[in-house]
Image 1 (tube, one colour):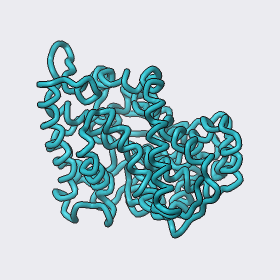
Image 2 (cartoon, rainbow, N blue to C red):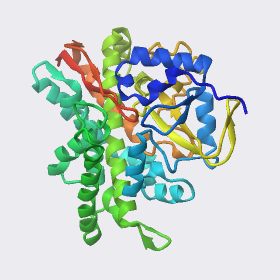
Image 3 (cartoon, helix red, strand yellow):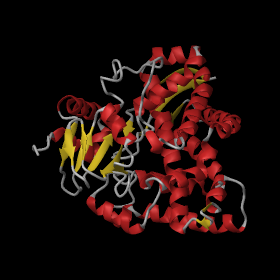
Length: 411
């Protein structure tokens, strides 16, 4: 076998701080797509992996879900983090493979289907108005991320689950600490056991709710999961709380990142903003472009269940692969002028929601929230500009802006 291609640019994918400098990150990813689309990465503290950066290769890996599995390493974390998560017994939807994944996903699938989205549309529209009104009350200046973008989707997903409203602030803190475990502003502590503590606290919280939902079913999504049965048997405690956790976290942080990153893009591209405000019929296409532009989920991991070949490169059984969605969504062979923000982009093949059997369960809800929020905000905007430097969160998994200071005038 020939020696694997090694390009130091790929090491950036294992550095959470790389995602705080998008110019440097995208320059490195463009080089990888051109010169080393399948590159071997060895970084101290991490188990080695192949970096997959081309759109077509990522689609091919995701399509071959039996050949490339989610278990045992669905996300990039340190070697110690891999061991700690495995020891904790975490089994969310992103950790599972078929056939178990298929039956587990089916438990909540109807809650995120077209009929449910239609039923939720009016309520989400009402919430969008609430949060735009709060922008008015803020007096024309705010940190859009922390005062608006994190709260709007949090309210939606927690209400869907059936979490008591009094506990929403606690859930916000835990999700920010969980996905911000590599960021100095949000991480719980320096020690690995401290950074894992938010996840354990979330598990403990949902264990208590499970007992209540099983004793008194409430008809919401949380109660549906708590009382679900597979082959006549109830879900185990770890499967139940793992289910809540992935919905509560991924259903919140990804959408808040897309909304805030989308607003930044519209601020920095005023002609695009004016075009969208004047033509609401473009909102669906604009939403897809925002999702492509921001790509809140930076990557997922897969493990080769058997020897394989990706882009002509031999992959050994047991090797891990990092699928860089950020890179795929700027692939020059798929997107014309990929570094142009274009709300009228045709045939947008963005892969921010993944592909295949693991396509994001909440994609429809995320699209609806982005659409409804911008549909409420843009017609009321008289002016908007940055009031400081935007700041991105350090991460290798889910993230985007953590601060977006803006100054605006609303009607």
